Length: 62
Image 1 (cartoon, rainbow, N blue to C red):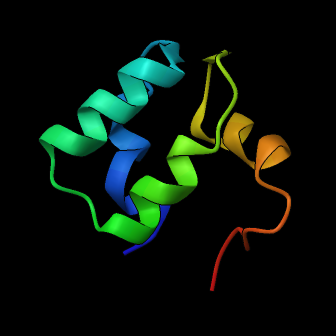
Image 2: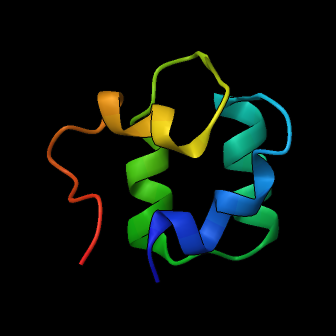
């Protein structure tokens, strides 16, 4: 499972870090994805692509 698979659908509107984390926990995403999301800064993200500038060591795709 990738981050896009896990939470990509959340971005119909901008989401804060806390909203992303809450949704990820509610949807029982794998721990390794939750660990990555917890590293995000307190910020509002307009699109799932906006996460990558804050996660430079994470590959975008397979």
